Image (cartoon, rainbow, N blue to C red; front, side, top):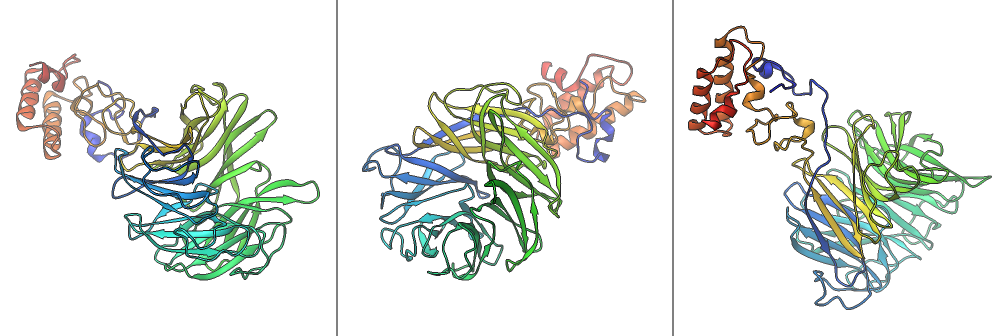
Length: 518
């Protein structure tokens, strides 16, 4: 069997990267689950947890008394509440918890839930509820930022509200390692309530910095021209922040993408305009390994809307821009994350037919659509999931074993899908780590996806028979040490190799295959 490696004896000296063209295949569905009660549950965020399992966050609307309906066990408090669901690795619910007051409590954006360093969680969104239900913090204006801190079992530890006399809507939050939290969104409030920063336009970007107990350290407003919407933030390696969102210019009311680089105290270091490439909507920003950033959103062309990515360097200079979508229709990016190979996985909702960059099927009015790209933004594969109704994806993340967890809403319930790793040859090693793509089905492989046949091919460029047998012996020892084959299996494979003509001339014999036949 021919492999990317060539002669097996040199594999130990090779760096662990691909040495031939590598195919990456769409993953298969491992399981799927729904969570809800009366049909008013809308997932807006998720996390794959390092200690196993998942957490899903969203909003519930009070359509009925949920008691005894579906798998929601926590109560309703107001018109709209927050709902947090914790599951194991197979999607089985461990617990659920609701948070809210007597009014409306909801989410904008998809970066709304984070696991904290102590294993608990923090959620952030907006609220117009007075103190009631589980909400203990004040109500300042029309809508306020609202933050809820819970322990690892979903019990509320504290909640905090931030706002002035107008509308204040949080869209994103992050834990600052060892030093509290950062909240971001938009504000139309003048200094009032517990807001101290100025009001410049109709809406301004508004940051609120908290300590670990949820107490405000500072707040900052960032000036635009009229209606400005903050859509994402990420932390930089020096403790600062990068913000991204849209600003509406006057005259003409045209929108531009704006990028702000801040220091750790919120002071502006630089500002960049990225033009109108992502002016329709922005899904967020992620920091790349080289210190640059990727901004994701939706690009508008005549007659169509497409997933879009813009890659910028650490100074905000655009390196490339890419779009992904069908020939016509609407493909609306909601969430994206980096993958372990430096690429990205994108997720959103699609109302387009196969064509253009889209190869997967269309099922209903809107479907889940997932697009996988490499580090340069080149598409690797796409997948669609849906029903005949409207299905909207709002969260996606790569999991520890190389698969993906996908979540959104379908028929008014949380709908979660677990995808396995990308694995073209089905050997259990993800394609991005597989040094031997195309390994024979059923073959035992090492951690790099290589079988004994791959590492010691019978028709390899052996100098003599002894070199071939030495390769087989050393490879069998490696497989034995790794616990991948038994002592008896190793003896059988070596005996078959000794009886073969491998290393003398080209031959159809392969040691692992023939040992199984014997």
